[in-house]
Image 1 (cartoon, rainbow, N blue to C red):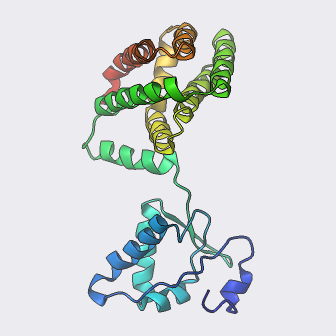
Image 2: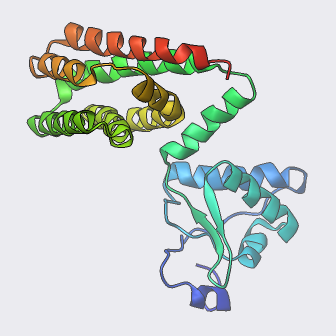
Image 3: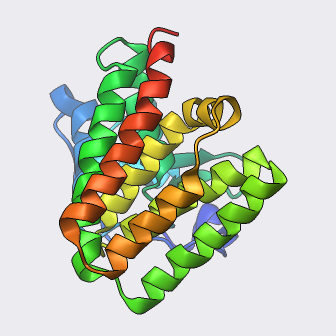
Length: 253
């Protein structure tokens, strides 16, 4: 790393710094090129979550740009959820881990802008869950199924206690555990993002309607353990369709 003897480098003790050098950019495309290089290094694995970019002065020298142009690019990357700009003596730009919140915020923004409706989000969730279930039927291990069974046991307790908040969290965890059965991290991220967006609406259903979720969960688990793809998919689709039909009146709110 260039200039590792600088004051900024000496103060950094807890976060790794990447070793690569950035190349100078063309002045007419400064903003886009800075973002592009950092995104490309993420794609190539040269940058990873937790890495801290060099100090602002060093970055500006590597890119051969003004510090004002660099700051504009970093603010854009922060808005996209790629970096977090820390303040203070140990401040700087740190690469974030990809989380459901980043994806969820992007989808939520589309809804706020009127580009997607709540109904479209709910429909997408059903389609994605169908795919998750198809994969889970064939990929779920005994340990995966045990984790799902324990989740259903806890859910039954929360229902009996009328603990709506805990039941809601258990429901979100059920779908996350199911997505993990697929072994596909992208499906896990998408599942988490959609669940985050729909959470307040599903909470409304939990508090307003007496739906027997435990009976549904147990039927689904039986089909999953039997490796019966068609019945497992049918059970989850029927359940989510009922839930989303209860949410539908909130579509324009």
